[in-house]
Length: 326
Image (tube, rainbow, N blue to C red; front, side, top):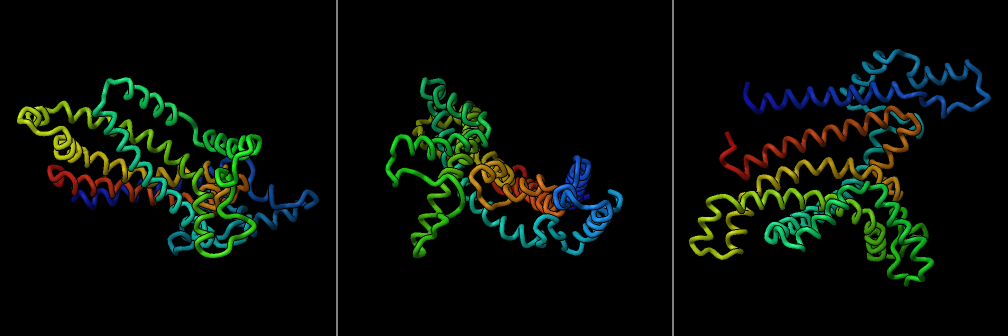
């Protein structure tokens, strides 16, 4: 079987396994949407009618078959809690998450690769050890803890310390609820609201990328052909740019491709803490409400992005390293 066809079949099977497992786990969790939608005074007949209207009266297999048939027709269903088509909810939330993820990804790789290469050039020094300790600490810290810490600093601490208004950053929401006048003011307001969530996502991501970049560059620096280039009198910056960085490009491309779904999925708690109306906040609220259509719709999006990212990683390796194109 050709490699491309084999990868396509594997991707379809993996996608089916992920959505099926998520469907089963969501339905096995205690309670369902009727526990939150039905009033305390409802009769058993009211509960039965609501379950029938939501399609929860069928067996799990029956619900799964119905959902799969809907997805096959391009219909992700209607939200139990909000009464809106899941497609519309995802269409509003996904651009917010993608925008946040794209900016964070740019800072993640720009800072992470730069710091990692700088560490590799100064490997073993006290500066390298200090930066490594800082990177490990940031990478090990939970994103929700970092988010809450920044919220506390820029709300409670800033208020008690009397920070100037220009220094204080908004910790919640996407825009100023009082509104802004003019497109430039709206853009500045959006950028100020994005600073804290972008800092959290970028810091954690850059800490991890810097470790990979450092290890990869140090391994390449010990290769025979690098020592040969140095023995021939090549300048240090030429060796790093022409030999080490060029050969580290396939690894960095793989990390970039595999980081795409990670940033989207990793923003779940960050969006929840900073009250950003993206995919993460929508998924958290849907899980709490047992809103199965929204949970499964988000799962379809996340699974598709992870599988696409793995495919892009394979293509990126072949493009960056001709030795692997076979």
